[in-house]
Length: 402
Image 1 (cartoon, rainbow, N blue to C red):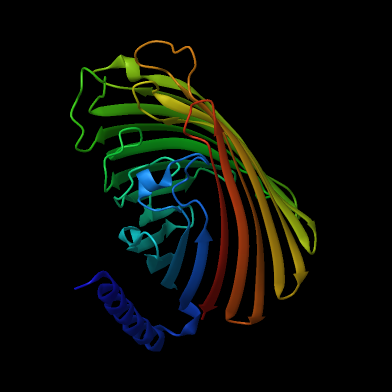
Image 2: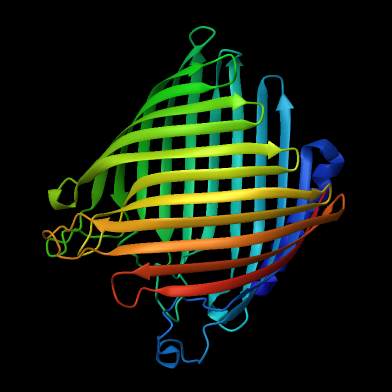
């Protein structure tokens, strides 16, 4: 059965399930969303301006038009103290010039918000997300490379008194790629965390969490020559503050200390501090600002680096032009340094500066219909040759929800 036929068969099955559930449960517990988008990208593979496109791609242009059609279904219900949530989606990506990249993403998110008593409650959840790897990081021309991230988590919170709570949880996560990616390869990870949280009467919270994770790389044999290990352990301690300053603004601050070690090749070990600030500020009844700053470490294993350190700043103003029209803007700039060479210090480690700007207009002419248009520009400047790029994108979409 071809890709397109399988897609439409899946859609038909989901629609029939949707209709049956609506009759059985009623409209308040079920939401259906159908969306169709057309996206134009003038530099799909994020190549530098002087790249030889004929040699790399077999064509004189890296531009692409992508047709995106999706169907999403979400369901929720409450039974006494228990709440159940389920959302699932099918999204068909059709590439017009580079057809081998076309795929159908099957994503879901399921959760049980459980409670034994009002003081003892928690969550049991599972999710799956399928996307295509960014060509800013993956340059395998002629091959599709999808990434699948799946995770499950069980957590609990117990109120010690009116303000203090003990929180704990266990998680499992898996990341797989169609094609091999050493720097951000396939892995399985199990983790456990334990913490203490203070709940202020205003809704603000302060929490401290200690988290331990053990991971194994999938289909990656140990390599004495490349110093690639078969697993890792990571310890993280985090302090987080969520501050409701007023009815118009919410701020979140966090800082954490992480340490990642490897059982066989200590040359791959690294550690340091993550930190960040997130701000949601309602400037007026018709305007708001979302802003964030973060500095984060992440594993990035190559022959010249063990991890990346990224400092990122973003601003996202929102304007409500009318009850049916909204304009959203977003600007993000990030500085990424690739550090911790396993074979000794480099004279010039890799350093990138990326930026992205977008402008989106949403119009809701009817209660269940939203039409959106957006313009985006993304670029990267690197101290290493061949990594610079600039790309411009435009998207038009229509969404029906019921």
